[in-house]
Amino acid sequence: MTESSHSAPVGVVLAVDPDRFAEVVEALRRAGLTVTGEQPILGTLSGTVAEDRIPALEAVDGVDAVDRELTIQLPPPDEPIQ
Image (cartoon, rainbow, N blue to C red; front, top):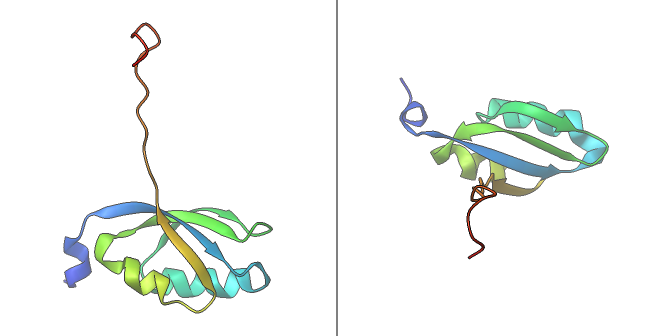
């Protein structure tokens, strides 16, 4: 078992070179990314990866940015504004 299998998966959004989209996505998969969505025209994709594999994604040629997905919890509508 590899060390990366012990790291919890996190959601990520990536910006990649749209002219090399398919090539870059394949390299990201080899680096450990599980792709959950692709927007080839925009040059973006989303997926999950072990936390400790994020540097490997950033090192892939053609990757412009790797951002962790953020979850924002809004209060229920009947709560007072804070």
